[in-house]
Image (cartoon, rainbow, N blue to C red):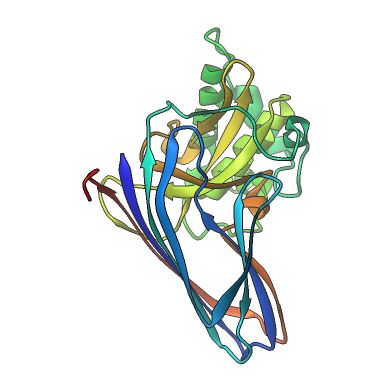
Length: 271
């Protein structure tokens, strides 16, 4: 499947910028089942300083904001070809060893509520993958998908206690629970082509777990499936903070408004 993506991020500052630097993880990875046909990035009131791969093999672009700017626009567009791998990404890549995906982070530390979810999960005789699907279903049964109930700093345990959250929260809870039963797990940010519309309000997030016989396998708790050709992987990490699309540091001002415009649609091979 060929997916055409157009992603514009627009953020305004409370005051004119003295100095600001932004770290962008907005370029998709080329991994098993995913090939980048073309990808472009353009900027308004900012300039590209450095491009590198981080410890998770995420493609990172470092930009600086022009002095005196009050708004920055980052535009991404490109075409990605995907294949159906039944959610299997395969071998481990990156500079972090697998054991680093077993340790908790501030966002993925399990508490009593997450341990209650784990206790409800049926261990399948069909193997680890089916058990992890059962875990995904138990999380979705406990934590309803509700926008606006959480934010980027909400922990997995807090979302589980509230019983409400979005894809980021579902992924964090899955990661916390998997690590609690000694399964390496990581966070994935990316794109998902919706069946009912092209325009979307935000990027998507899901989780991956390490299955010894298969390697990394994806689980989208919010949709109750493993990723299929409609999914595009952009960045991975131990939690959201490692894979966030935009992070940065600014002096003398703060970000006042953040707006995303996103379109994902299927294209024929000839287009």
